[in-house]
Image (cartoon, rainbow, N blue to C red; front, side, top):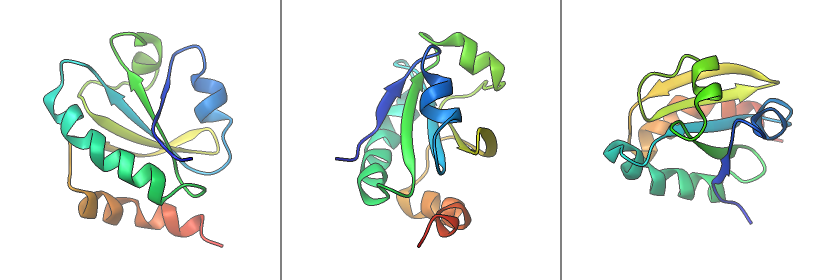
Length: 112
């Protein structure tokens, strides 16, 4: 069953960098209202795009190493990784339709 999993500094490499296919990482924080606003959008996408897009969440306060490694300064930052490399970075909450448009080319690549 799809869903947004939490990742940490410790398992980031295995869950994101070594994953097959694109992985969207939401860099988030408990104190961030826009992060809470986009959470239901990402939860829906995780189910709808299961098998084509993996979505994970990383709490920057609890996992500062990964945040620093990718230069993430604003929350939420949505960073898409493919083949272990960041290929797209989007800052701020957005509506589902806009997010799908911004990710469309990456999702097209994963279609059979």
